Image (cartoon, rainbow, N blue to C red; front, side, top):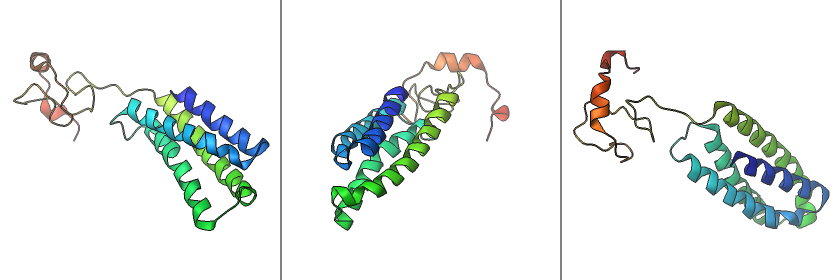
Length: 152
């Protein structure tokens, strides 16, 4: 999914610089839907750089559209600001992509919920109270985790 996002960003920027400003009419929605897919793939991992990349993909087209409507820019007037802002946003997106690629998908300990990371110790149900994902209580009981050794 990161590769798809990188391709969308690079194509959008190249079309903007070398073709015309109206290319954002096709690359904007592509960027927006890529953001939705990234957000869905990474679910509740808000701390992850890929989540922030997804938010950048979602809000940059909305931001550009708002600027065009607010200042009533023509395509010619929007070209230069779009190139500068797009370059800054692309640098941010590439930094988030590299950071996200470097970190990878976060893994959780066996005593944590595998979806959200909630500590599943001393619970009276077989579902995570944070996200609702079911788990096997016998597995948690076998681990015999010392609660005092857990980080605060």
